Image (tube, rainbow, N blue to C red; front, side, top):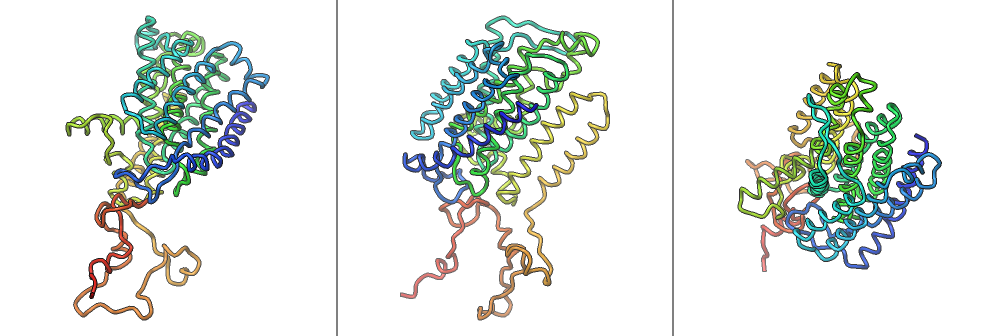
Length: 444
């Protein structure tokens, strides 16, 4: 555990320190696209944050290779080299897309090639455990196709959810933390050495996200871009494929009674078709809903729109920060709840706690935008947004029979209503700062 934590800290430090110079490079290189109709930020922001994240990945792998215990991962397995090869390719495609906006089909082909590169070097699914049946061996073609499909699905799921400041990095960090706990339990608790690469991948992925988050939280100073979102999606998929395709359920059968019992005990997170979907449930749900929505409208599944989950949270009245925190909550509940259930699947308390937290999450999800107001005597101790706003001195009073709009009414203006233009961070439509002057017209 000490060496995993050291690797995590090195990855965090390198990613954090590289992000500042990368931001300056992105500005100089012109990787600052204009604000699009679906964006929610106020001004052009540089991309190419994936360059710093890829530097953190390389630093984490290089540092782990020189540690006494983690060095065995590189000597006994070719999976770290396979990951680095596929990550370099997908990162290069992402950098080109951040700068030149390449076609979606070209990106899809690049994702499949990157997955194929990892498959050729041995990072593939060999068998799958099926409940009630046991271990089902896969042919080479079946394993390769399933591996490529899982990699492409996970990459696009993470890429689709990257729509708000700090959203994708935070959600992937949460799910990789839960995945690290699961993989470390198999490696350390059961003595399964095949789980060591997946544990290392999860630790490095957490470091990449934690090092980038301080620069990416709202208001973001830099975006990870496709070079970062596709990169962390590939690392996440590589860890899931590694631990699912290489860990033999027969090894677990020594401790839980038999092959079928072992498969049933690890069912929540051990089936290859469900494992990536479990740890990235929200991004995958967003991906599937986007495909159905765009296909129903007669559009391409790769056409961008404003119907993602984070856009809908903004539409119902949540602020930018609150929408991100709600997505964090659901991601943590699904990821850590699944891991907890896999450890104690017979415990009813875990199910009850998950149900109770889900109910709390639904209340938070449907709660309209609300800003609490401090009492009069405490207004001098709280930020201005929590103070009660009264009419300023010298302000014109409204005519009799009319009511002036209050601060609460101004905050509850439906999202998307207003003057079109630059998008705000907490609204889809722009909001003019001089609306009254524009409406009044000119006396000349």
